[in-house]
Length: 354
Length: 69
Image 1 (cartoon, chains in turn yellow, purple):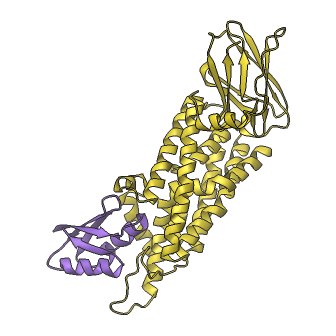
Image 2 (cartoon, one colour; image 1 turned 180 degrees about the vertical axis):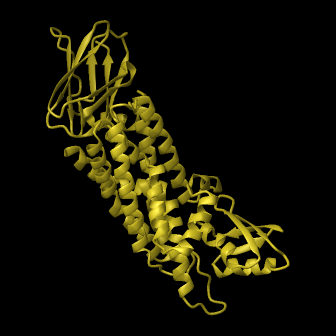
Image 3 (tube, helix red, strand yellow; image 1 turned 120 degrees about the vertical axis):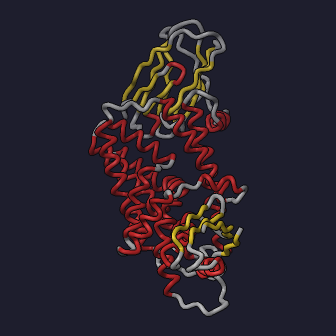
């Protein structure tokens, strides 16, 4: 249940914008029919200003319904995907390097989309995902014959083919559950959580004035840019590379007691995995001898539970409350061993310099 | 006949779908392929039934300025 709540909150806070950046093209395509219809119904005198999606005089189309249909179809599609991923969870292992590659690729994609929204260079237009020509023609002709609800439903379901970075992380969690119903519940909660922001941003973009829209899109682009950089950073952390977030966290905790030397008698290091990350984030240990790293959890429900040491290929799902011992073989003096959560969000390191 | 137009203000895939709908609405036009990335529109049409000017006008009515290349 707690994982479902975390999924919902993740969707509510970061999922909406992140998904809109990747899936906005499909949403825009699904709204084309409605916009076309609304424009056709508006009488326009000869010589009147043109009506484009971003021109001065705007049709203010009735798009709330189509956006809701789009999101409804998306919710159903992702719930089914969660069901399948949970079912396949016992067979598929999404390794840390694979997750890292996905996070980095999605991050680059989001940064590209943000730069497209900033209109930095025409090359960034290639980051916009739209249906291929044959599908556009099929949608247009079917939508002409059928009611306008067809394309939002159809394209909303198609979003399942282009999950955003945060969704990918949630898909990994769904696989991790190894249970069809739990997997479905996680992706349902996440997609539901992401829907309000997705709806609001998409709706406001077409309802506010052109000048305000430009400001609004820049704001959205800035947030998407940050989310993209965080995704790349998390991917780097997941393969054991120094990450900006890890460095910031460590410099931020400089005033705290962070040096935890190994207990000489037991050869044991203690690391707490909490809801806000790992504590301490920097541990010192002796080189040249085997150690035991005890990772302790107490009512921990964040992704810190999915503990990864990339250099040792350790991937351990910790209990929400308990203790897990990980054997660390003898290391060369000066070795820096990084650890992270499975999403690359929380990081820390052990320095073998004692 | 096939003719390429530069289309200004193609901001997103929705704009692409809107200009492509000329294909369904203007008799004599057999195919329209627009590209958001290239800001271009390629139109296949029967020049006995429709003129370049009529295509430009159809795009204008949808809110886009099409310039024949």
